[in-house]
Amino acid sequence: MIRIETERLILREFIDSDVDGLFELDSNPIVHKYLGNNPVKNKDESYKYIQDCKLKYKAHGMCRLAVIEKKTGNFIGWSGLRFIDDYVFNKHTNFYDVGYRLIPKYWGKGYATESGIASVNYGFKTLNLDTIYGITEIGNEASHKALLKIGLDYIEDFNYEKEQLKLRWYSIKNK
Image (cartoon, one colour):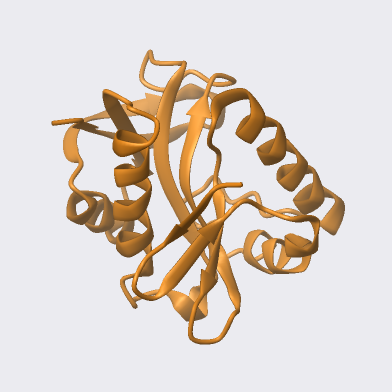
């Protein structure tokens, strides 16, 4: 079972009971402003996401992780690495992507950066990855800044035809 602790957070594998928190997160249109504006409509979609992550934990050693605030024990979102083998981004597939998504009341507290740094460190030290990538929509300045604080370098902008989005591409190499 993957479990990563930071000063303020616990990142752990999803469990079925995370479905309510995940639904709160992913049904919120504000959260999806820079994600193609396609929030989930029911808890079954959230449950399916959890099951998909469980398969990726087994297949690739990592997927997004539930983020729990230590102080309160609250589910606040997800963070972590995901092996991207089901999409093509910027002519890349079969790569690890660092990402995060938080319930809005937890925005602006540095949790995306804190969890992202821990995730990158896990990828390099535990999974022995050579490179980790990041992707954000061009207009999402908060995510852009978080990826830079995590240590990724901005590489270039690209068009994601599948959802007609303009995205930014980032990477960080294992030293």
